Length: 356
Ligand code: NAI
Ligand code: MG
Image (tube, rainbow, N blue to C red; front, side, top):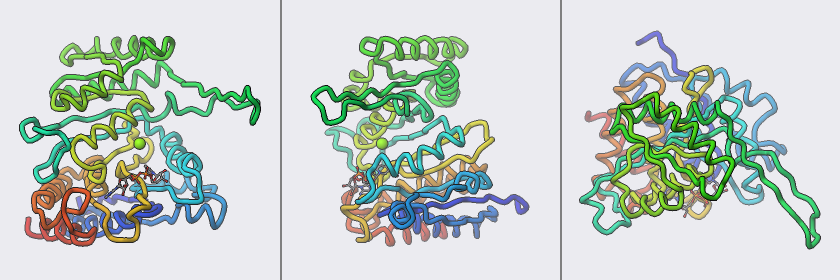
């Protein structure tokens, strides 16, 4: 595969995003040297700092620039002085929507060495994937706010669900489950949301009928949240709308131990547009600049990126190295009960890759 080039746009962003991006760059360089992956990384300083300096998180032609890449790797965006909805809608959401990254894939699993807050977690290993709809649903621009400041002040936020949007996310989840434990749990709330969720349920059922080998289970999202805490080991693939999937995936990650290890992929499964890979965590201003950030969420996101870029073997090696680093108390960061720095964990992963 010497002729193949893999072009990656790296956006470190803000806070610990920059620190974990440094870790990703080092690991990608090592894997590229070893496996001849043709990786070319260009870096972009799109961030809240750029917004404060220039009035925009990315330049006007930012999306056109990214379109030329095979994948986007992002640290995190968000910083004091820039409201969170401005940073989210100024960079992340435009990328997800312009590139039809309609799948937000969030694998969640337990690791030896990472302590779950659940009492008997060792006896019931967690291994599930949340498939979150990433382009429509509750996160919409439709709505308005009026009567500002008065006693009748009102805000209306519409949720947008389409047959096309529900069908394609259901299909992705069903396909994924057919290669796993063949069970999809659909998060609904058709008792409270009387238009959108009955429609969601109908379309998900229609798609599931086409795949009889996969079992479909429907759960109201509130009951599902409780079960994710009580019996997380019982889930395989969970399919959910944008808002439900966002909440459930943070919950599931917390149940395994730390948000610092959780990865995500924003996928355009058609391959027409670049997909984007990013840790689930944010810029963590409380620990930024101190070298305390756990790089595992970012490095596991790199694993997902390499799999997507058709580099499955190096991806598997990196995953093995990540697992080994978590098993060793000397190479864990504080959020997972250790004292190692970001740099020390990165060095350990590089050593494990070199020894492999
Ligand atoms: P956060 O994920 O940045 O931090 C939550 C808590 O987890 C903090 O105590 C933090 O220290 C800890 N933490 C997070 N990642 C860690 C890591 N890798 N290693 C060790 N500890 C870690 O979420 P928060 O505080 O709600 O948001 C901070 C900023 O990040 C906000 O501006 C928010 O909008 C932004 N954000 C950006 C995201 C993105 O770029 N995709 C996602 C979530 C938040
Ligand atoms: Mg979230």
